[in-house]
Length: 462
Ligand code: AMO
Image 1: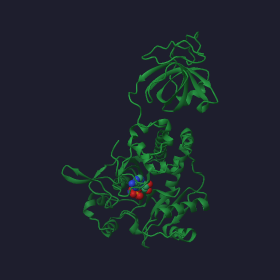
Image 2: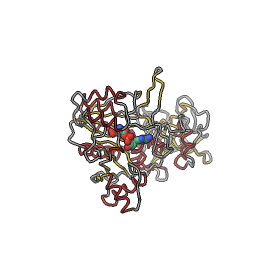
Image 3: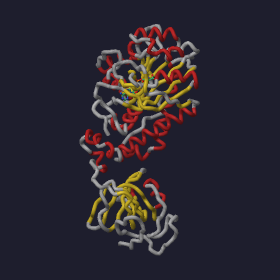
Image 4: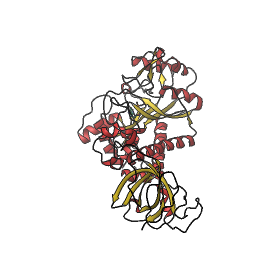
C-alpha cells in the first residue's frame, strides 16, 4: 500500500498511501507528475477537476485521526476541507499549516466524495499549542461566549468562514449593483462633532481636548455628497453605544449606505432598495453555493414583489389578525415578527416595507408630510428590521424646524444646514445593517456571529 516517499522539502512528516506512480518523473509543473515531483498547488474546491491526478494542497490541520498507522488528516484551505489519507506517524497539532502532495481519488465514503492519497507532507508552520476551540466541532460548540472569547481562532471555523464569505459577497454585490447604476463610492469621517441619529447611544471621544463622537451613521455626509455626485454609497463601520444587550444589536456594525438625488418621492427609494437587495441575494446564490449548503441556509424567492404596509396598518393588522397590541412609536420586535409572518402568509415574501412612520418616530432629516407622518420607512426581512431610510428634508427652513422640534441646536449642524441654502434637490436613501442581513439570511440567531470581531457592551477583545 505504501509508496516510497520522495518528497523534498522542509520537514517531511509521513509516508504515502495508495497509487502514486514512482516511474512518472515529469516536471514539477505537471499536474500528473509522479511522486517526488512537486505538482502545482490546487484548492480543495478544485479537486473534482483533478481526479486521478497528483496535486499539492496547502492548508491547516483541521482534524486528524490515527487508525492503526493509517492517518486521516482533514486539511482545510480557503476553499474547503478535504480528507487526506497516508501512512506513518500522526500529523502535527491542529491548526499547524502544511503542504501535502498526493493523488486525488474518488471515494463515496469520504466527506465531499473525494480524498487525497498523500505521499508527502511538509510542515509549513507548526502549531505549538492546541487551539482553544476545536474547530471541527465549531458547529456543535455549546457555549457561544466561549466561541467569542476565542474568536481570534474560532473565526477560522468553517461556519464562521462561510458566514463572513457570504457577507463579503453581499457587500461586493452591493457595490457592483450601485456602480452599474452610476453611484459613486464615498468615504466619510467616523469622528464627528454631533450625532446624526440622536438618542443617547453615542460614543464620546476626547478629540484634542474637544468633545467628539464616533459616527452613528454617515447620514449627514452622504446627503452633502449628493450635491457632488447625485448618487453615492458607502460601506463602513458605524458606532452605537447600545445599552440593551440583544441578539440584534452591536456597538460597531457595517452600514451599507445609499443616497441619491432628484427623486420624485419615497417610492423611488423603495424601488432601488428592492432591486438592490434582489441583486445581492442573486449574487450570493450564484457565488456561495458551498457556503449556503454548509450553513443549511435557504435564499428567499427574489421573484416576489416586496409588499408595503403603512405603520398604522401594520399595527392594526397585528392587533386584529394576531391579537398583539404594540405600544410606543415604532413596531416592537414581536410586532415586526408578526408583520413578517403576514408577508410570508399573504404574499409569499420574506420582505415587507413598513412606510409612513410618524414624525416623532424618525430623525430630524426625515421628510415630513402634512398629516403628521413622514416619508420615512423600514424594510423587514424575515420579521426583523434590516434597513431604514426614506425621503429627506431638502428645504432649509423645514430642517431648522425639525431640529427645533426635537430639542436639537441648529448651530451643532451648521455646515450641514448651510448646504440646504445651495440648491439641494429632493433626495433620499437608506442604510442596510450588513450583519443583520447576513445573520437573517443564514439563520444565525445572534448577530455577533455575523461579524469577525464583534463589539458589544461586554466585549472589546479579541
Ligand atoms: P438606523 O439607525 O435605523 O438608520 O440603522 C439602519 C440599519 O442599521 C442596522 N442597525 C444595527 N445593526 C446592528 N447593531 C446595531 N446597534 C444597529 N443599529 C442599526 C439595522 C437598521 O435597519 N441614517 C439611517 C439610515 C438612512 O436613513 O439612510 C440610519 O442609520 O439593520
